[in-house]
Amino acid sequence: MTIHQNERVRVGAGNVVVIGGGIGGLATSALLAREGHRVTLLERREQVGGRAGSWEQDGFRFDTGPSWYLMPEVIDHFFKLMGTSAAEQLDLVRLDPGYRVIFEDGFDTVDVPADREAVTKLFESMEEGAGEQLAKYLDSAEDAYEIAKKRFLYSTFQSFLPFVRPDVLRRLPRIGSLLLQPLQSFVEKRFKDPRIQQILGYPAVFLGSSPFDAPSMYHLMSHLDLDDGVLYPKGGFTTLIEAMRRVATAAGVEIRTGADVISIDTVPRAPGRSPLDRRSATVRAVTYRTDSTTTSIDADVVVSAADLHHTETELLPADLQSYPEKYWNTRVPGPSALLLYLGVRGGLPQLEHHTLLFTTDWRDNFGRIFGAETSVPSPASLYVCRPSATDDSVAPDGHENVFVLVPIPADVGIGKGGLERGGDARVEELADAVIAQIAEWTGVPDLAERIVVRRSYGPKDFADDLNAWRGTSLGPAHILKQSAFFRGSNRSSRVENLFYAGSSTVPGIGIPMCLISAELIVKRLRGDTSTGPLPEPALR
Image (cartoon, rainbow, N blue to C red; front, side, top):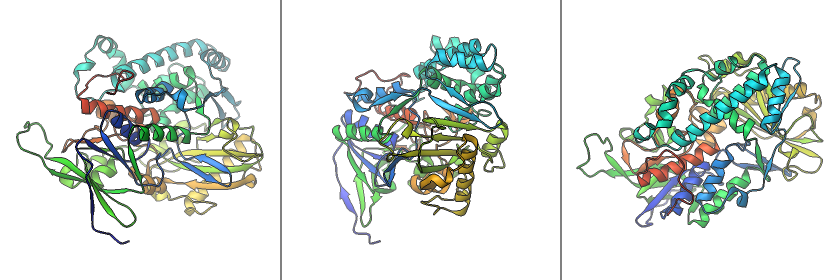
């Protein structure tokens, strides 16, 4: 590669450079441009979206990552802050049933319906008294969600004073209990049927954790799928990315793809600061590389929405790292994943739009992923998405689009995937086993023979493509010591005007959380320590 003389791009005062074009980076750049800043977004890959990408082959179009549209009010709130709405930007349909669950040991398949009353009747049919117990459980989940949304999710945690509010103080004993008790034991005390326990415990995986480790505060997740239901944007999640890119560019964001950031550049900070302030430098520029050119962009503010471990340990010198390698040695990663993108000839009515396959030995399954000695579960609890059940634009006529996600340990040694068995041997062996498991459990014995497009994706792909710490598919796990106050801050403690967004920082993992992380950057720059969403419209 030929490196030409560095090009200096001066873009004037008030310039913000955002690193990373995933959900967090796109949302941050859009909101800050709407706020009046001049924003340049740098994305290493040729398309924006990050984990929420899109891949096409032979008439199939696959969402490469997120496929559950949860917390719709958070997504709508982002668009309203941008002067539009989710309804204007997306064609949303409600899934009914919300999802299907297939169990390992001869239990009947369960279709989880789209409304609370029907779910209550379903649970009662599975366990006497479970319907009444579910009503109490979902009331508790809704209360936990509302207080989290009002006081915790939208907080930068700059100040503890906003938490000394009557609604928080009144709930302190209950909040303490929910934080200290694991989700699994919280569920087990209320329901005896193992199928119900699994349905209510599995949402911990969406948080990059295990029901045996995640605090029971996260039972609030059941409010999202059992009360609110599950939506799907027609055309796939790529339509969400397209809409976010559309509103970002309309607000004035300049998006540069193929821009591999190699450093966040700083200058020494002027003296006279508080002795408690550890920041010894301030941002000056961001340097990135294309195929043949190194370019530096002057910056008054830098927001990295890239993986926090990568940002801290690769883009900053050691003396300016808030989170050096020794910090990461004590952190717990969320799971990685084996992903499969399968184009299948013929119909697959045995699968719903969302289908979950649950193993009987729940504790062993998660212990293999999160335990001290990790290994790939076999058989594995896994997730299958068949968007062609709802959307005829994602597969050719007479074919099905199938996306498979298998939570596995965050271990890059498992390897990379590839197209048509072109991945590493270990990944392709796992893929064969997973396809065979799906075929057996769903009653589709010829599934493997009907696959006409096959692509696998492994932990090493997450590390190589997304700079993901330890090849995790989601980010740091949502265990107690990595949630809320204890999660990575969204501001550097060493470099002035350097901020962080995305799944590595507050509030956490998932599309809605990454959208909120972008809003928290606006709050940081405003000096806003409020704990709720910004008013709509909020941006000046």
